[in-house]
Image (cartoon, rainbow, N blue to C red; front, side, top):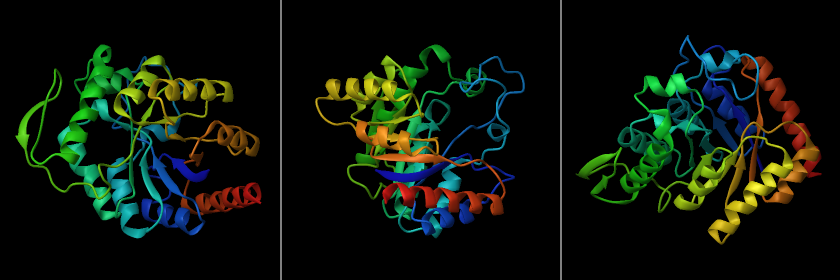
Length: 276
């Protein structure tokens, strides 16, 4: 099982270049970054973690800009959106941004996507909360077409464009890995439908095991499993490794550079002890 680092890269924390190089230098396998375009001041959507919305949600850098900066100064780590809110993104622009990062990084981009939970945020992008799942499906399909076909076209209810040329194409063939976030029956069906992997939150082990088995049963084969926000708990690591997770990403607080580097040293030592 590989170990990455998941975080909210913010305007008052460590910069993306220093963060990416520190992660790679310490032997971690991935940088996983969150996305929120903005946080509406008037918000009724409950924070899934409970309580007040943490400060870091208000300060996130754009994930594609962040990963492009990381790509330029690293050579080994995966560059993972965890997760990109595709229901808030233009699919043609996003396909180009993602393929550009894959090209710059020589094939290290991983596309984690989800339907979002902040209803006010997605509404500001013109997204109807009631149809965001169907919108997500079409945008995934459209991006895959733009990555693999030349020219590409897509005709759906929410995404519709005629034959078009889109370059660059990703380095990875047929396209970068796609991981879908969520924890619902709809998520299971979506992972199966798109032949994707699952990127989960650190849910209880029994929940993870049940969902993973549903995806395997429905797909008829193993499904790639990844996690973001993983706690610093070796017993939990062993349990998710047994379930079949290929990668976890330890949750790193959004703090200034010196504190970040100290925490990364602690995390690296913990992982080294775990691996023996």
